[in-house]
Image (cartoon, one colour):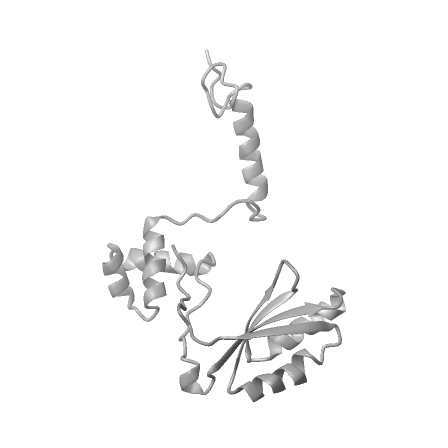
Length: 194
């Protein structure tokens, strides 16, 4: 007879002779320990959450009423799900995407930056310049032969050169910058596959 819940020898897998029972205990303990740190555990979203996220990526200005209709929910549960998705960090924010050339920023460049060293002060100085300059739309720390990849916009080639000379190349630890300019865009999306 198998032990009852709470008795010594009770198993999460109560099949007599189940060799997986000790493993189940360890997995449960790991899940409890790691959950607060968020290590190895991803937040759960279901099919409806994914539909909500997909609809919002297509049109972030959609009303809750219309969103609920499109995903097959009533308004109140849809609103609660949306708030939970925001609170749990699935939604980073809502933005309006502008057309760069239409507002006078036709130059888009990708710059590969290599540093001489990676001392904390060097990295802090580089990060500060990148974060302060509105021309830098993205900055990614990279694996491989280069340290960073920057996406930069400018009004003209001359403006890009001025930005590079006055800001990025003024950082003493910058060893090299190799720039490629966008000639035409074949695909651009901010929509993630959910």
